[in-house]
Image 1 (cartoon, helix red, strand yellow):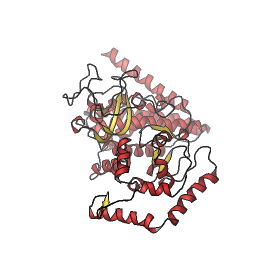
Image 2: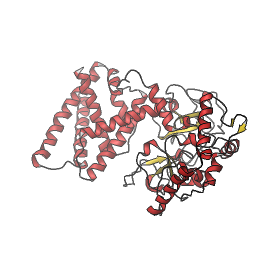
Image 3: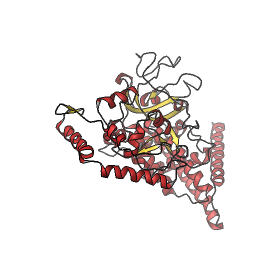
Image 4: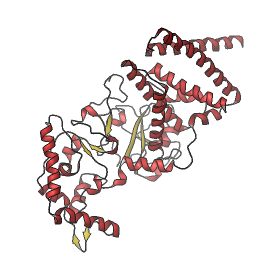
Length: 448
């Protein structure tokens, strides 16, 4: 058991070393090959770990802060949880094409098979593993109502290995610049090696593009992980959403809006809710809840058409500055009007999914976590180690012990002299390790 633990620590330290040396330019299979035969989920976790750890180290070193092993392990745990949430809701063994246009699934775009300048295409999780292993893939996170394109007419001489009988084109799929590795209104890649600004990216729930926080045109609120965002472009395309935003959205401040204007809009929405007549504000809500409990049609009550809630909100006269992205609290979708006219409006705009709470990414991730529930998932690094033979295990352990001793001696000099370890120092150490390894391999080759 001790050998397994030491080898696991060695693999983790090698992952960190590769991240420091290569920054964010990481090819996941090269990391996975350290363990011979790793499972697919390790590819995802290890790749994201390398990228995020390198960013963590780079950011903290540029600020002359100390990076501890706790920082790295905490980042590792968060990434494993994210991988579980995103990937567990999708099938990693079977192509999703037979399921049709899947309500929500993890997607990838292959820059090797469908590069920029050609037709955009997306592949499911299983095809990213089985059909595009070793290719340059763009991670698209999740997208709704998408059917796997792998092997169709967009892929010349690259048939799908998992499911062969596919239509040439999936006409209902929607594509964007994301499928060519570009995101946000700035159309930059992510991670962006030229962007030195520390910023978060947030996905619009309508167009599903990812935007930098600084390009939203509004302030990013606290606890943004529990909220949904609609970008300014989508809000302006669907102007009726501004009426909902004045009453249901998270109070926010658009770029160029004064705090007084923002507070006035928020207080106006609150006053409207407080002063609305009971038969206009409370009764529709009670009817809706009662109909849901009784399993009746949401569009009617006792044979009478339900009042249009959107019309009521518009009549309240509450205004909101129509600029910048809008953030919405949890549960806001269930408060949208479901009358016939509003459902027709949503359908015409291609937004029939909007009132559906199960469409949210949070619902998808929750489903994934439930599917991963029960017995603790095996550690992918431990599983990888179990697939190695005894000689390979011993080589890893000896390599770990050698590196541990040399790294301790290397860092001891800085501790004695009271110096700060920089990224260049770490890179120099691992370059020296690699050169020694090459000399050893060359030596064994000549002896043979």
